[in-house]
Length: 69
Image 1: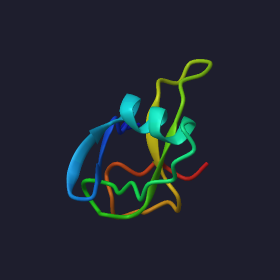
Image 2: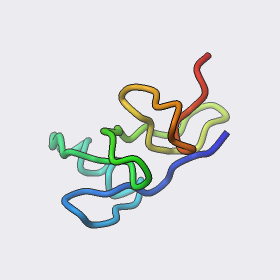
Image 3: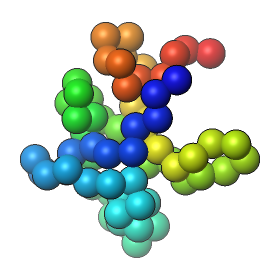
Image 4: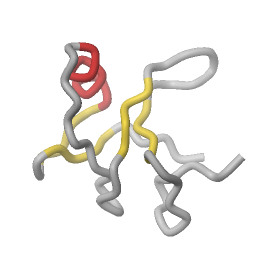
């Protein structure tokens, strides 16, 4: 399963750690998948999962979108 650690914000690449900091500061930026341009959200690490971006809605045409469970 791919783990997306970069996305775009206003046309600029942004890393997951910076995105998590923005989210925790109370900002709600329009993060976008760098492959399909669909909205994504940053997810903190936890358990056995590293920090990553996740599509708001699964996109079966994007290799970065998680497989439906």
